[in-house]
Image (cartoon, rainbow, N blue to C red; front, side, top):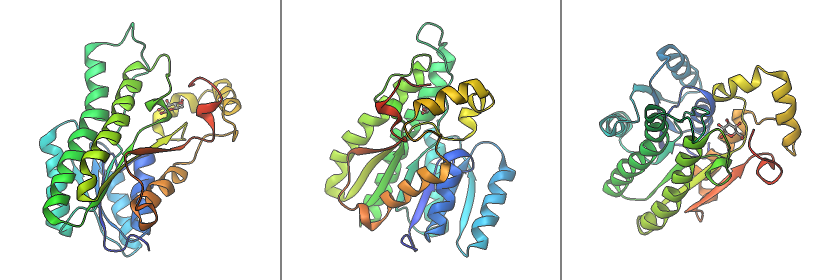
Length: 255
Ligand code: BGC
């Protein structure tokens, strides 16, 4: 229970990697504000699962592409649990479109949900952490594609590249407040964002072959890295990204 008494916010916390992060942080003793925009029933089921662990969680319906909604998450954490110690900027989408065919609407959607939300999530959580004192942790869920091109997924790569520099720059800026900002860069993970690949056996074979560990990650294998970065063991880590990609980034182009 290394996070006993800590208060966390997880954006996109009711599905995919976000759901595993929520559960892992709760299992480690944290109270969690679960942000969601869709599937309230999934959020409710998650709250109940967490309640069964003896911990507390609340679901908050918030669209993280809107700054006012991000503030709603911070306010909910303060109101219900008294503070914010850990902000996980996890919400993310992709359109799988190239530089030649991405529309303005697709560009805006990806950049707003992935990057704008992480920027203002960082800002609002940091302001609260400074107000309450004692530092905090901001964890940005990026991707191997914060650094590594994925042809046919341009806006996504752009957003993740932006998160990379957000992590580094905010990490440097906020260090004097003992607010540590780190990125977690997964490779391919078995979550809804990769559903179309997972439904295609030929593509899966190709993908598995491109990963040195020979398989996609389970979402729990990313959540455990996040929990480590939120805890005491990571007290000297900031302005950097930890990759959990089964070696993928060093072996092939994105698939
Ligand atoms: C993307 C997936 C892709 C994976 C590995 C992830 O960040 O969301 O679409 O399969 O990276 O390339």
